[in-house]
Image 1 (spheres, rainbow, N blue to C red):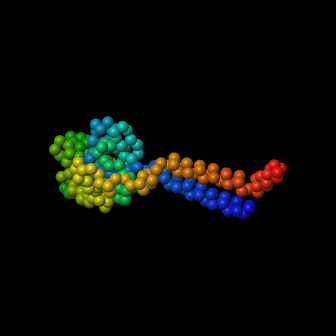
Image 2: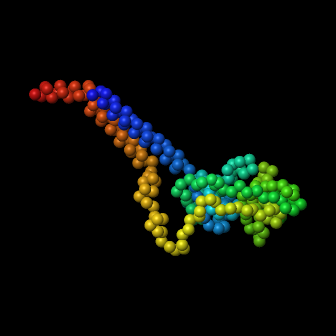
Image 3: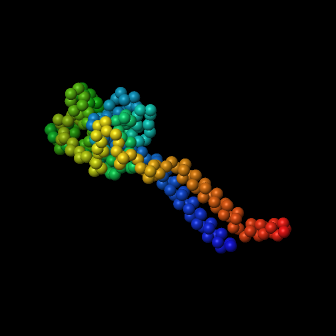
Amino acid sequence: MLKKSLIVLAMLLSVVLTAMTLTAEFAHAEGERWVRVVDDDVLLYSSYDGKKQFFVLEKSYYLQILDETDNMYFVTLMPNEEDFPKITGYVYKNSVKLCDVPPLTPYYPTEKLTVTGGSAAIKLLPLNSSETILTAMNTQKMSYYGRLVSYGTTWYYVYFGKEFGYVESTSVSKPNVPLHPTPLPQKPVNAAPSDEEKPSEQDKQEGAPASEILLIVFVVVLAVGLTLALFLPGNIKKKTTVFEQDI
């Protein structure tokens, strides 16, 4: 009987450990949230009130959510490499699509621009009258983040010489950014979602909150306690003695 109890206990402990592992993995996945740029001309802002524009984000790519307000996501982009350091900003919630699963890499394109003229001035703001931070010379390259049209002139937001700034588009090569390898969602305008687009029961189960997994762990632990109470030799002997006394 003791041997049988130990086998049952080992099986239950195995279930507990598996449930705990699943809970940890679920919590890790929940800790990373992403949005995708699925429309044209989606702006990244440098302030949560949407008053200061950074640049237009590249369509089809992804941003990682760090925090959120009532109507905005605070996000980060770029792989944080030497030539492409991460930056943060804000996007309106209704301008991006929330992702159900982590995206495939690359999350955001790493494109470089080349100075095509004699030199290119990198400005603090997208204005010809703005302060010049650095000047890049012919054939030098800079990291591209996005574009912005200011007073009819197109500017690129770039990283060069450990500084961020805006360079006029006519001074450098045009960015050639391909679409992300994951196809963009195709949905007719004003069309109701099809049965295939509706979340399946499996999707709903996969999205169950971690609290449900913790409940499973609690039930398994309770089962372990009941098993010990029923099968330990001391408890069986005690029950037999009471029965014999009653007779």
